[in-house]
Structure formats: structure tokens, C-alpha cells
Length: 137
Image 1 (tube, rainbow, N blue to C red):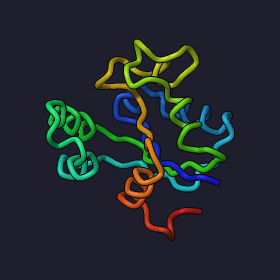
Image 2 (cartoon, rainbow, N blue to C red):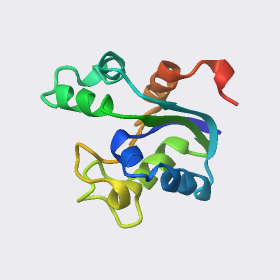
Image 3 (cartoon, one colour):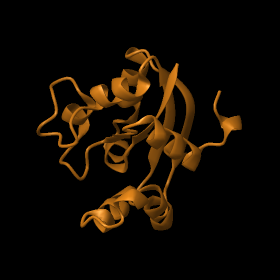
């Protein structure tokens, strides 16, 4: 089984959609092996998104991710990384396919409801940023 990292972002949490997204995760056959509700500080968001620090949207992204509570998760399934990315849909909700989480719950590219790892190496870093091995059940 493969593991991936996922976030229900502040916009989806504030809109009351966290439960709907969690329900979809279970419906799609993922096992949730780690889950936390957090309110990231600006510094924590900057550390998490450090790979984007040189991009023009970095400040806006980290401001948004530290604007309210979010839910961070470790999901497990066969092919979890691709499966989660397929369920999320395109980064821009306007371009996301019908039935995807970002199409249903995202507002625009900067507030698109969910995050997911894009590769095994990214998943390893992102999982370890928020979870110790003892927290993954």
C-alpha cells in the first residue's frame, strides 16, 4: 500500500466542507492512517511550502494557508498518490473535471480546497513535516 499526504485547506474548512471531503475520501477506498486539525502559523506554512519560496505567489499562498484551520492527513491505498490527485482534480477548479473535489469545493486556483503530494519523495517530506511514525495507525 502506498501513502500520500493530503490537506483540507482553510477555504474548504471555513465553508463547512471538511466532512463532505472526508466522506468522499472514505467512499473512494482510502484508509486514513493519520489526521490532525491544525491552525498553521505563517512560519509553519512557509516551512511547508519552502519549495515555492522563489515564486511570486509564495506570500499569498502562505498567508492563505495560515488564515484558518485546516485538516492534514495521511492516506493509504493502492496507488494512493495518483488516486488522490485524480480525486482532487486540476489545480484550477475552473479546469477540474466534474466530480472532483476541487471542481465541487474549490473557488479559484488560490483557494482550491485540497492539497496532495505529487510524488513519493514529496509525500515522504510532507508526511514527516506533520506526523511522527507513532502517529500513523
